[in-house]
Image (cartoon, each protein chain N blue to C red):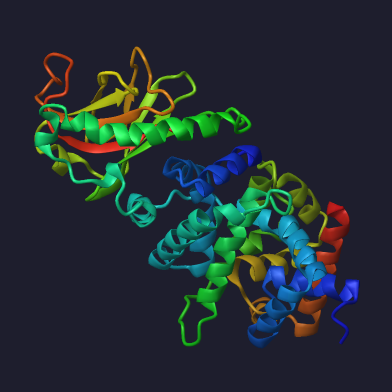
Length: 229
Length: 181
């Protein structure tokens, strides 16, 4: 058979994309594809035609633990966000030093992002993913179409809260933390902060007394943190 | 359905290792990709495994994604579908029988899976073109696509000679191609 014949290539590509090539035939076809740009193009065209068929299925949100597993696998090994929370870090200036390295990186990323073409407007945008070493991707912070925020726990945060209130903070480079509000441990919370988190901000969750930090200044340990894209 | 330009921008951010970009892709696309994996594998735990593997692949390969060559949703669907196929065709693996309700519903001219496809931007033209095929052609194509059934298995399920199934699929695919041009 002459595999370079366009009609045959097109027919085989259609069969391959639909799944009709089995066992040895499929393996041989994948081998041929590696060396033949025409065949790869025919396959790409068939994929573009046929794969949207998947959208005929009713969408099904996967269970929360799937995202946690993904988040744990993609997290950088030694990111500041994944570092174990240390209550003592709040005392003195060491906490700010820990942050400043991350902030410098955030500023560079911000500069980079500003060079990118603007993305299409969307109903809901993910602003940040907050993690701890034992709880990767535990809380997702979204911006709603009406500009309010939603804090969506990706796992039950009751154990993490340990009976205390979870308070969410945004920290802009060189400024004091500002409270975004209290977050419920078991359900999505909608927040209406006066000044929403900005690109390059660090966002963090601390453990506070019931009702939140008494003087608008964080008092408890950081249990989750992340960066705003 | 996720906007293609938005997904492209997010994939570019994944290539720069922005975890929150992957989180948003996941929020937008995972319900569709998970439905496909569930349907093909007919097993909840296996579908969860595949989805996890695929999103780690999407994260790692985001830098290789080329917008000029495929739509982002097509690219991600291909990753999921190929992984499901690899898993289904492992020697000795036992897969429960597919539920024929969805694929047989493809034969109807009344609203069904095609109506759902029609509502998505990417699926609209495909739904129109699928609607122009004859019912049995649609069913045979759907059984190959969603259930990864080989032609002889489709012939058994539809109690139709193998040669007829092959020609339904071949002609159906050619008609789809002409219609989508």
